[in-house]
Length: 350
Ligand SMILES: Nc1ncnc2c1ncn2[C@@H]1O[C@H](COP(=O)(O)OP(=O)(O)OP(=O)(O)O)[C@@H](O)[C@H]1O
Ligand SMILES: [Mg+2]
Image 1: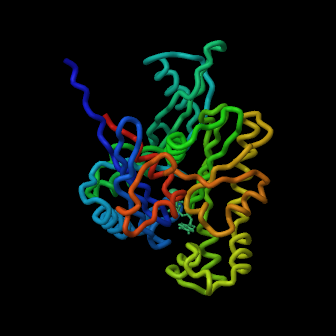
Image 2 (image 1 turned 90 degrees about the vertical axis):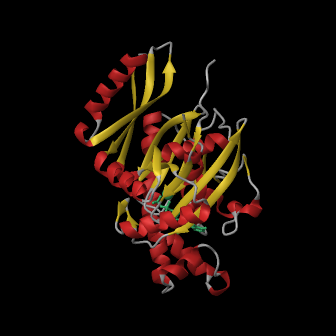
Image 3 (image 1 turned 180 degrees about the vertical axis):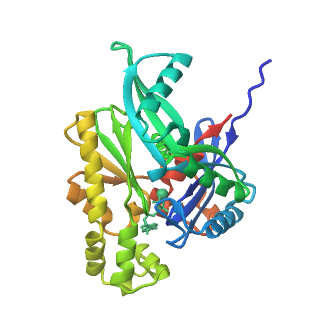
């Protein structure tokens, strides 16, 4: 008799410069139920551009989030993005098994902008073209120094990081759990964070490539603080729409738009790079997520500026949950914020 080991459930832990998200799902017969969820905002100086500035504060926030959400959580899936990780897509001769692995790693070593000694390499075979005898491979190189700092921090929180993913893959997986991409459309998943914005390009219904840019909501948040002379706590209320009556909405709109230049140009550069490498004319639509999707007036502005239709991601579309069990958060109100955490929590470890 073969005893099949039950895959272990992991909680998705998404540590960001604006907020930490923790989410757990139970799976039964291929369908998911949300069983734990929490979001905790951190001070905007805790982490800047993926660099941890206040380690103790971050540990404290992660631990208190775990205590609040489900103190039994130990195994977590985490993700890296931005400066700490580089991804590249290559086409090479089709190979199988160990030969494929050797050839891919050899190729990666020739290409990685990092010294091989300094990075941990991983890869995924995205597509095999039997006729041409070629395969498309996604290379992922994580900077060891960055990875170690992050893993040490998670361990110090009393957690066990059993999966390390990239934000981009988590976002792609969360999309796949909830939507069936139309193979005739070119889709971009646009996840706007605080310091990092991830773009995931989908072509022929499958993953094509990804690009991270180092801008996000921080510039907008700081512009709101300055324009309305607010501290962090109040600026957060404004951005979350909790102070609508006392804030001039025209001025808020102008502030958001005025602070979005760098973000928009980063996205435009990413799009043109993708369009030339994938040889496509247009992107059909954007699926926007991250807290950035919830910033007032931003999604409309992105849509009009880039002239591409935008829809908001709902990573809970196919996931059941009892709204009653969440005291402090209303999942449906913040769904786009949860994309990375949902993707991470869908990972199973055997
Ligand atoms: N509920 C909300 N309503 C409106 N705006 C929000 C909301 N939550 C977050 N934001 C804004 O969205 C932006 C991104 O927030 P998010 O929490 O997704 O960033 P993060 O994941 O912590 O950052 P990063 O991934 O870059 O480290 C921030 O500018 C934040 O102010
Ligand atoms: Mg994020």
